[in-house]
Image 1 (cartoon, rainbow, N blue to C red):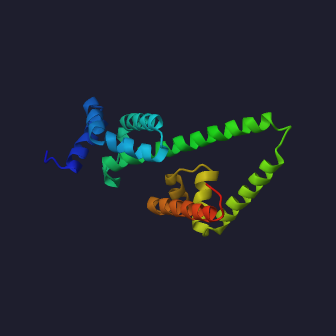
Image 2: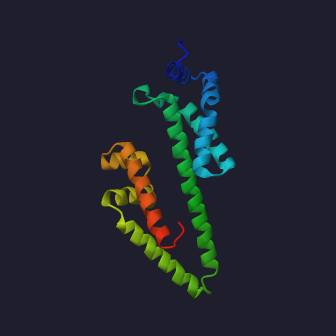
Image 3: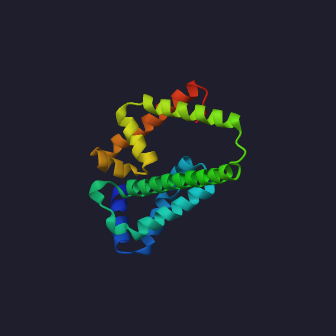
Length: 188
């Protein structure tokens, strides 16, 4: 063992594939803080970040056989698992919030606030305008991710694009929409 991180990661990956429990401990010791930092940055919630990291390490343990060192490092694979689980958690939280909002709306459906309805309609129109201002490539990537629920990997496969290109289009599209909406006084 040369002590190089890639050599150590290669050894850890082999140990994980063999079901060696000490490998997951070593992986956690090496990348646990980094994984937690990533999850916390995405979720902005310590408890949720801890849950996501625990779930990600468990997933790595269970699916160690699917790791392919020729496609990237063990570190990057782990961090992509953490990232995807954190994004999934965000989407789940958003759905829960939407369901709670729908329940509230249903309870008060007989007494709509006309000003709130006008404000929501205006906000929806501005969001739609912002979405329509995007270049088609960014608009399509956002539609697949947020309206159809595709993962970044699924979008890349569907559009036959590199994963990095898909992530870039999503990020740029969201940034452009945010700028457009902030310029019009809508807080996204």
